[in-house]
Image (tube, rainbow, N blue to C red):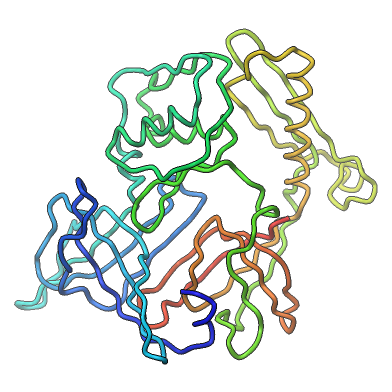
Length: 362
């Protein structure tokens, strides 16, 4: 979907395809999908994607994956097909009404395959390793495809060991995400074809907006919008702790600015947040490490100083997803700025109405 179709009316059909998990090829259409269902995306969850569909009949799909498409026909009779996601499927019950059978399907993004798997014995990542490369080995070792990405210049300063507990959070996805976080990269997410995206973290305020909603007759953003700000829990002190087997480095940053409404003097109290990092980069002096820890605390304080500004509304489908930034220009609603997408719920019906929660990118 591009901007030239922004103002056009369009018709939508939902199509579901079977996908061979070994080749990634689509092998056939799934018949009997009931109109409705939804797709949920949430960047604060580890698997990030889940969907629901209803299937008439009793056909199931073996080890195949399911891919949801939106087939769109515009008023000028041009058309395009937009992939919405590729999923594992679960069909734990069936509903009957006489001879008719309906099976509710619950679908999960492919990261669920990593979240469900654990190592039988502990694994160690040697000091001097590239944590991004190690995360990629874990992901591809489970049969998932990783999209091309830039190289990481981070190297671990100590040996990292995983799988020492039976805790379900010590799974392959958690390990891969921890390695990416150590390198300063974004945790795993997938594209609509189920490929895993790895990329360095970039502050939302520095990302180029991928879509703009501008108020007017062709705006896809609806009028009913919730605009809220949360300041009560805004941190005014950040503590960063870097640990290894040999040492511990603690960095701090405090907001004492008399012009800051959430600073320590203006609040009359300290609101702290603490962040721990289980690796210290190699070949750094103690002074350099202290500067690094203090700088990280200062960066996090700058991020946390901003009150959470959340905008929630509904728009007609647009080519945006969680983690993207967008621009809202809605003067009659007094909303104008750049925002990062935190969650989306796409209803699988004509127009694909999408409820989206945004956070101000600042």
